[in-house]
Structure formats: structure tokens, C-alpha cells
Image 1: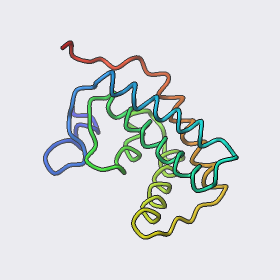
Image 2: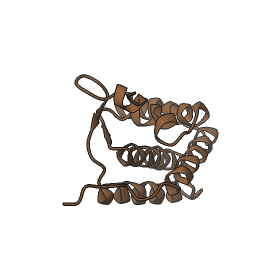
Image 3: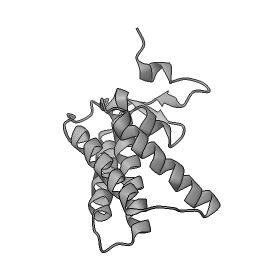
Amino acid sequence: MPSALDNLSGPGKPLRKEPPDAKEFAGLKRSGLARLKDASRSENSLESRFDLAYNSAHALCLAALRWHGYRAANRYIVFQVLPNTLELGPEIWRVLAKGHDIRNLGEYEGDLNVDDRLVADLIAACRAVAAKLEALPPPVTDAK
């Protein structure tokens, strides 16, 4: 029986199968964790902290997807598949999806409306993702 990720994979669908790459996984994880650390620094502006937290979330969620052997066709899907990649529920992925929507308003319409609560929620969600990601064994990659 195909997995939920398999069902989302194929022509015209948001995922495509691609073997995991240990180096890519490690790089995404390292980048996500570094940004998460910087997002937590109160001396950074609120907008910078938001940007760092959002990009941390994306890198960590993409690392989880890549660990499973898939690549995303769009940024949003990495948050939606968290129940399948890291067994995280809507209390996490909905916060990250909201961050994505706010990020898009800022990037494409110049309307970056963030507050302390949103940034704190994003950071907490990122920490939950990071904890689950840390528990994964190294990805199984094909020998080259």
C-alpha cells in the first residue's frame, strides 16, 4: 500500500521521489539549527527573528522530507507533510503554515505584519521540529 508521501509524488503532484543525500541532509539541518539559534536572540529585530525562524522551519522540514527520499515542488508542502515525515500534528504545522503565509505577504506585497507572539510560536514549533529531526538516524543513501 502506498504511503501518504507516495500518493503526493508524481507528475503534476507536489513531491517527487529522489534518494536521500546525507550531505544535503546535514547541510539543511545545520542551517536550520543555526537560524533557530539566531531567531531566539532578542537583540535581533522582530522582523529578522521572524525571517530566521521561518527559514529555520523550512530548512528543518525540508531536511525531514529529504530524509524520507522526496523533494518538494513548492515551499508550503514541507509543512503540510510533517505528520508523515516527523509525526508532528496540526498544532505544529499550522503555526509554520501561518508563518509561510505571512512570509509571502511580506515578500510579495510588502506587508510583513509580525508580532512577538507569532515569532515565539514559530520558534517553539521549530524547536519541536528540530527535536524530532535530531532523533532520526542518519539517512540511508546509495553508495556512489
